[in-house]
Amino acid sequence: MKSLVFKVLWEEWSKFRLDTGLVLKLKIPLKSIQPANASSDAQKGMKLYKMIGNPLSSVEGEFESHEPSKDETINPSDIVREVRYEIQEENPQVYYLPEIKSVLVLKPVLKKAFLTSKYDSNGLPISSLQVEARFTILETP
Image 1: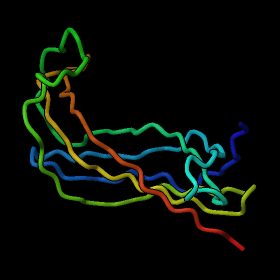
Image 2: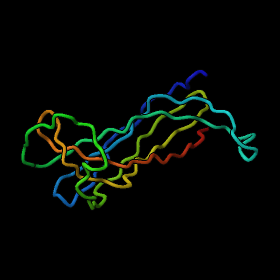
Image 3: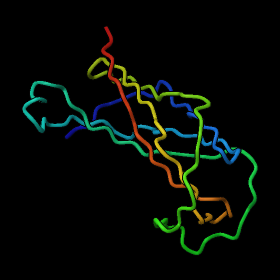
Image 4: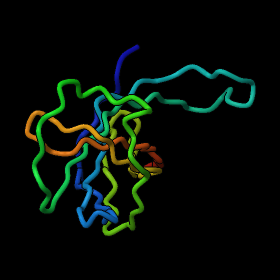
């Protein structure tokens, strides 16, 4: 199926203060939007879309560098603990969809964050995140 054309209006980071003192930055830039088929009777007659985006994260703050892990793959046994956090700044991604005369507002939601015992090639800690994208499509005149 053909992807819908979209124009980026806003793609800022949402920020979360972690109990480690660091600030986690998170966004889910949109890569494509494709029309989707109804999978149930309740969806028939509705306009459905499949949205594809990859969560991006970054960390701000000071932390001690460690020896890089030989293998950066995270297994359940690598999780040290769940990290508590508070929302510092929520910024949705906003896109204009000219073909359907609509604006898509995508909000990244951090569900859970975990510290692992792994470190990347720069010696920085590797976290495991559970992220969800919530979105609204608003028709424009």
